[in-house]
Structure formats: structure tokens, C-alpha cells
Image (cartoon, rainbow, N blue to C red; front, side):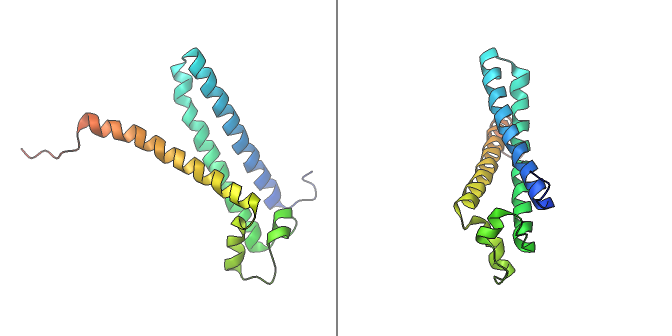
Length: 136
């Protein structure tokens, strides 16, 4: 399958497979940790979201690279890319079709989940220790 594709295709597919595996194992781990009440496993679940985020960022970067270099060995680039289009418009072509919009939405969802997680950890810590300066 990878014999005739470019390096962009191989790295992009690998990133997507890693992201899928991270999401599946994270969901399974969360289910198992919830059912068995395993606190140690539950604390390791955020690592899977980090892995999915990194995989999504790599996949987006590779797809942008393929659009900029006009790598027409990828079907998506054949569909939305053009040699006549300036680079600025080729970079925005990532979100011009349904696949790219889903790709973009997936990345945004992971980033927002990480931000929500950070707020759920930082917010209670500030409430416990107070955020008022010491004026004594």
C-alpha cells in the first residue's frame, strides 16, 4: 500500500493511525478504569489525549506540507490542489472539502478538550490556595 505513495502519505497515514489508536485505547482505558475503579489507570488516561493531539497536529502539518509542495500523489491534493493556485490559497485548501473540515474539527475538539482539562485542574487549585495577594 505504501510502496507507491510519497513520504507525506506514509507519515500522514502513520499519524492518523496513531491518533486513532490513542483515541480507542483512551476510551477503552477510561471504561475499564471506571468499571474497576482503578485510580492509577484513570490518571494515565490524559496521556492518550496528548498522544491524539500530537498525532492530529502532525497529520495537519504533513497535509499542509503536501498542499504547499503540490504533492499530487495524494488523492486529497489531486482533488483540492492546483499548480496554478498561489501558495496562500493552497494552504487554505485543507478545509475546502468535507474531509479537511472533519480533519480540522477533530483537531479543534482535541485542543478544546485539553484546555477544558487544564481549567478543571487549575481552577480548583486556585480556589484551594486563594488568588488574593498577601497585603500584610
